[in-house]
Image 1 (cartoon, rainbow, N blue to C red):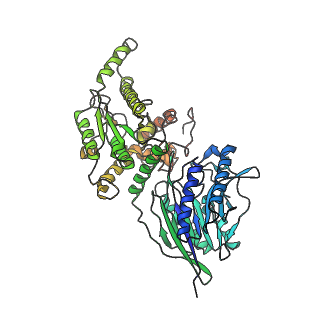
Image 2 (cartoon, rainbow, N blue to C red; image 1 turned 30 degrees about the horizontal axis):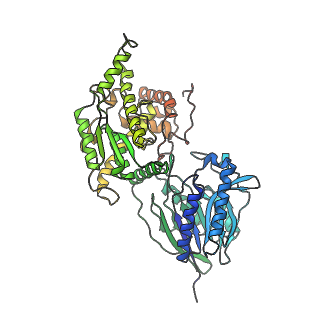
Image 3 (spheres, rainbow, N blue to C red; image 1 turned 45 degrees about the vertical axis):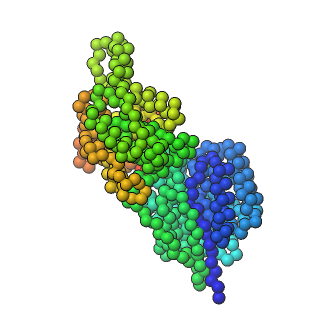
Length: 551
């Protein structure tokens, strides 16, 4: 007696927002491949056809029409295949736009799910774009019924419970779930509980790839009805695997498959940033980047990330020293570039600074030298970096970390200049943590064999080097203390009194809080960067620029 089997190709793939034709082409290629392997179904993630998040593109009828046309194209092109295609996209129906999941089989198109729970928190604003689905459906294949709760629908127990009552024997969850630190473990805990509640096997399929300030980490997985993992996809890479389910007695059982190793928290954070950087550059139709390399830890880590994302031949670093930059910093920058095998050039700027000082002398007569002159240096560097970027068609990367951006310890139109900032959501203490991890991970196959960041960069005291003998701690608390306060203010939304009660100096807390509020206008003009925390300076945190409230 033969055992009933279901073969499903799961496609953890990288979609391009707005590239419906490009995404559809990927569907066609993978569908033909899945058909040749005897797959019954090929499953793509949430909103794969449009890319995610499409945001206000869904308000354009022409965009929605392009999605519809590509679905029809896929249906026409695959009508002779035996594999059923399941794919997500925005769908216009009776004048309403849904976050929908679509079945394409033998030339026929059928909506099998419309997202019910529309997330409206953190980076999500789906109630702005979509109408909530008003009814549930199961896909009846004859041999079994499948339910398709879309992403957020699985984070609530009601949808899967209702699908079970409708006869669903298998749950497949298409997702567009962005990365943040420890998010994979959170997803798995939620889905394990859904398995135990429903006594059903669950397939969780997630997008992978970078889109603006979001990174989708993949990490898809399959659980049996008891909540035991039987298949784990890797994170941060595209992967297409066929999983097999067998009919045993009165249930379907997913057969054991490969369990990819999930890296440490530092490994996940690092690879998320590298993927976000890579996709931002390439999807913006650039291939090379330029970085202002100071010899400090921030620009060093950005240079390493850029090299890992794009290859050494696609990274150019420029050192732009003034009289305040030490020879040791320049030597460190030179040594780092050699370790990475990247192009490194030095352009002295002291002569330009002197000329600017001369031109401003009459305007500044009788006034003491202060941060104004320090910022001039930073802004002159930005002018030269942008000139190189324009001339060579290299995308300029900014290098300020989250701690500096939080308290305004960065120069607007100076070191904040750039198209993308890999460190935008990384506190200074984590910059050191990731740098040390990357040095120790050099032996991994993913990276070059040589420890890239010189020890001197890791151990020297942080300095902007905009004045002689300057140290960051001249105007800021230690980064350990600063980052603790900032995490309480930003990630935890605590008030000053609540932080002071944790034993932190009132004077320091009040100072940091004031700096945070005063720097809001800078952050609104900062370039994007990949989200890895709960509260990045992006869509997930919305604070008025002009704001007189203080706790």
